[in-house]
Image 1 (spheres, rainbow, N blue to C red):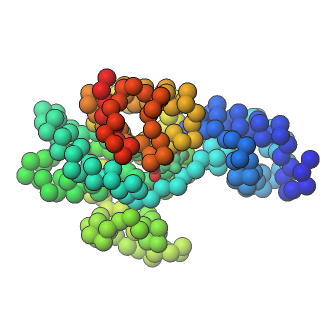
Image 2 (image 1 turned 180 degrees about the horizontal axis):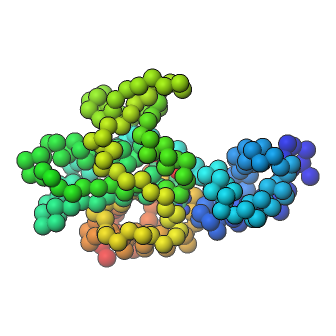
Image 3 (image 1 turned 45 degrees about the vertical axis):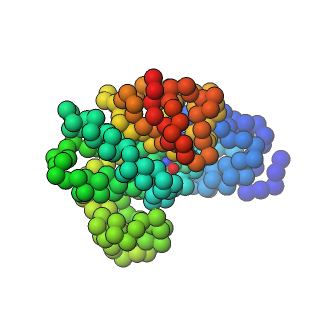
Amino acid sequence: MESREFPMTDANFTHIKNVAYDRTGIVLGDHKREMVYSRLARRCRALGVNDFDQYIHILESQEGEELSHFVNSITTNLTSFFREKHHFDFLTETVFPDVFKANAATRKVRIWSAGCSTGEEPYSLAITLANFLKLNSHKYKDWDVKILATDLDSNVLDKGKRGAYLVSGADGLSDSDRKEYFTESDQEDGHHLLAKEKIRNLITFNRLNLLHKWPMKGKFDVIFCRNVVIYFDKDTQKVLFDRYANQLKDAGYLMIGHSENLHRVSTRFSALGNTRYKKIN
Ligand SMILES: C[S@@+](CC[C@H](N)C(=O)[O-])C[C@H]1O[C@@H](n2cnc3c(N)ncnc32)[C@H](O)[C@@H]1O
């Protein structure tokens, strides 16, 4: 038994690993043990328990309640504005011209940021879209364009909905986008950028576990699922990318994270290079 604030046995860690995998698809390898300990120690403190036996008892007995705190604690939410900027350049140069042309009959465009974390990704999508629409306003006025932003973690979604970001963490934003799409305000915890209505209105934030049933009926033109499946095993990835292919329109686009690839995961996309894909079947 360890002599630390909240003793965590091997059996406790295995139990936690299993709950994480079953509920979120996230694989917690042994090298994640310290990280898991420090994140869940906060929950132990908040609940006033003495060790992980007691914590697991609460996790199992008051499922709904502690489970969402548990899930929020084990997710990794690192993100930033215009992360992997080449994806956004690709949208402007290739994807949007292609999609807007193809959708002339419906005048509708749908984009999904799956695993959107605190919202920097969907706001970057909204800015890219708004800039494209501004440049092409003569052609695409009054189109129905929407971005769906989903995540499993309710805390990060709340932050995305608020649309308030510390200036110090908003390096990826250009000065012109910052002026055009954000107002600035001093708050207790620092100087913030607040997303303006014109980008907020393009985004709907919803909680969604990617492992569960998806309620969306319509198909998407573009799906971003970046830096999410690195935490999943190959079997989970296979199922997920098959479902993304089903949820994309024919020849729809998929962007994944810089350390991810679809090799031996899915044959339903063709690789366009640089973690960009197009649905082929
Ligand atoms: C590292 S962030 C990536 C954020 C953003 N896509 C980016 O690339 O900057 C991974 C996100 O995936 C979410 N996530 C993990 N498992 C999930 C699941 N089963 N369903 C939905 N979201 C999940 C986490 O909550 C986290 O916010």
